[in-house]
Image (tube, rainbow, N blue to C red; front, side, top):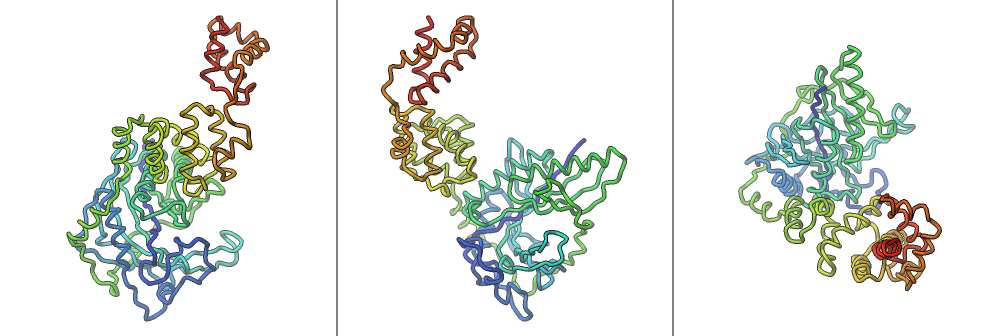
Length: 465
């Protein structure tokens, strides 16, 4: 059954102030402020207030549009979108509709070209707090979030599977972080609405899918739900649904609105914005090396395997860490360890490198010890784990946990292991290669990881002759 998916992603930008007033942008605050303490008359939509456009938001939107190969508008406008909900007190949202800042772009993702329909700027609504959960008796409104600058990136319906949508969002997040307009380690949020239809059914919108982790789960559920309806001969009605990550399911919100229902009109309190060639040129000059460019350079300059390079460049802080470490140790060694043991440990703790408390000097020191043969690969991996957990340099970790490479009579250890595991030794002589891996593992266990696996293997093969 054919599937068509398009995404509308809303990204909170990390400007110093909000999009239409001078209030501080809460996404840059180290601690979440008390409700309704970062809000002014404009945020609250009080009568007589006038919005003013934030130049930094326009500049960030231009950078994003250029990175996504979009056409820039020469003139762009803001519009009012009729919006009768308590999280938008003035009963409309200031957004862009008729003439967005950019459109008709594209992005390569997982070997596939994804069309970018439009990029536009808008304001975030306030936050609704449901007391007692959805369906509870009371709803509170926190206007701190009102006016946080957003860019919305709308794709063409070019995705044919949930996995494609996830890979696109992961790459988009990486591009936005390279551009310096979004930081996933901050309180800034990237949310996506997915438009999905199956052959024989109507288009359904699924709202409030946060980040990249839940997009695949939400779409898989919705494909299964719609598919079951079609198989039973039931109608898939056009509607707006909400993703509930706790239930792992989508829930009906309301019937799908048509564009005409929003009653778009130009925002009369904001003037037309002229996007001059000078502004576009300045934005182009400010563009950093983007993920695809860095990937190609790492493969060529450092001769990294493509899978390693892809893993290293996927996160800006890891890519920068690699370049610093590659000046001190073998680039291939640095790439393998960063994309392997280090990234695995950080992912386990749900941390980015800059959040982990690790210092680049610690990683360099550890890899230099490994490169010189002063520590085994198994114990070096253990040191990385302890460094993340204890926030201590490798020398202290090695001393505390006795992870250094000891002077061992390796042949004596191997003989002891072979004596205890005669069947495994005989199986290897008969051509069972797995038996050798087992014997190496037993020797590593016997030496508590203080012997090198390759040296153990050589000793075993010599003694088994």
